[in-house]
Image 1 (cartoon, chains in turn cyan, yellow):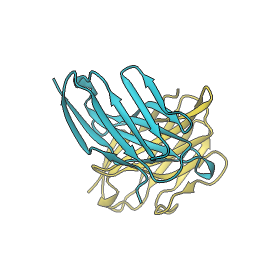
Image 2 (cartoon, each protein chain N blue to C red):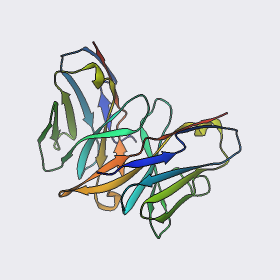
Image 3 (cartoon, each protein chain N blue to C red):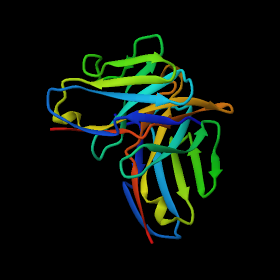
Image 4 (cartoon, rainbow over the protein chains, first blue to last red):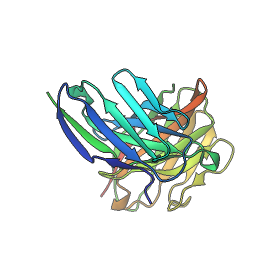
Length: 113
Length: 116
């Protein structure tokens, strides 16, 4: 079964608004990573949060992790048209699966200028 | 960080043929991974390629269909064999890099494959 489930599947907002995407997973993890993909091309690494961390910031990005609920959220503040992309969460379970990422289904974000 | 290139960036192939995709990294890395992204879908791990040993395949992927080479610490190839239209996907390689005290994965730009 799919490890990561993301919601919403698609999100459409106006420039300047905040965008929040959620990710849930099923098994215990070593870390969770968020990626951006533009137009079906390569993935850009956005941020990594370790299992013992609860919140992390990077520029306009804020990620939270709740291991008790097996969920994470990505908040993009003051969105820009250039933020339009697909966003994926990916979990690294560690142990024998170390380094192997399991991806969520992704959220398609559209930011209207 | 790591800079990763892939060749070709895209290709259109005929059913029954094979295509070899190359992945080059600008630094030596221990672990390299190959992923597939089917149209409109998320990424699925195909296999882990470690230098000096056989690749490790995930459930649903076999060596005969996706042979992998890892001749050194900066290069790997993935071959998609005996292709069918169902193999039309984006194929991405990734590498794991240790940054400070934790690992990050960096992805190549992908190879967009269309099988007719």
